[in-house]
Length: 252
View 1 (cartoon, rainbow, N blue to C red):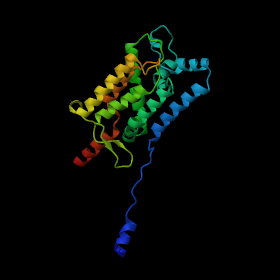
View 2: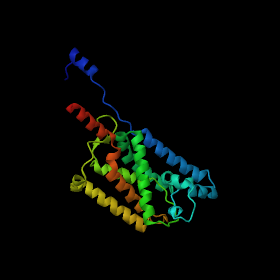
View 3: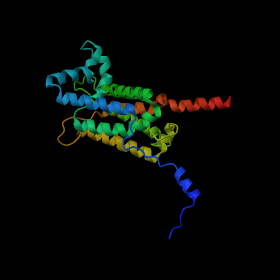
View 4: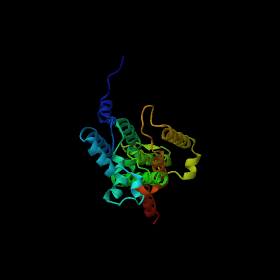
C-alpha cells in the first residue's frame, strides 16, 4: 500500500518542469523554403505548363554544358542557370529522394550555419557540382537538374563533423569543430560512409537510377558538390570562428 505524499513532495512535483517535446518535423525555415520552392516548381512544370513551355523553362533554367562552348552567345541565363538548375527535378521520385536527403543533412547544417551562410553554402556547392560536370562533359547537351549536387556538399560537410549531432539547444546541429582531414581519414565510420556513398554514385551513374528509368545520375556533379562541402566547410562555419574569437578575447 502506498503512503500519501507529504506537502514537500507535492511541491517538488508541481515545480518539476515538464519534459520538452520535440516536434516530429523540426526543419529550419531555410530548409523548408528550399523544399517548398523545389516542390512548387515541379508541380507547376507537371500540371501547369505545356510540353513546349516546360522545354522553354528547361532551356533557361537548367544547366546545359554546351551553352559555354563558344558556339552560343552568353545571355543572362548562362549566369543564372548554374544556380537555378538545383530547383528543377526530373520526376517525383527524383524530387522525393532529394528532399528527404536535404531534410536529413541540411537541417543540422542550417541550424549550425544560420540562414545566410547555409544559403551561400547551398549556392557554392551547387556551383561546384556543375563546374565538375561541365569539365567532364563540356559539349553535353542534356540538361542537368536537381539539388543533389548541393546535397552532396552537405554530406561532405557532415563527414567533416564525424556526423556528431548536438541537440542541447532543442535544434539538432552538427557538434564540435570540423575534424581535421587526417582525423576523418582515420575514422572507420566516416570512411565506410564515404566508400558506400562513392560506390552508389558510380553504380547509379553508370548503370542508371533504377530499372525502367531512363534518366541517369550525374555522379560527376555529386562528386563536385561533395568535394566542395568536404574541403570548404570551414569557410561557412561562422560558429566555430565565433568560438575562436571568444577564446582570443578571454586571453587578453
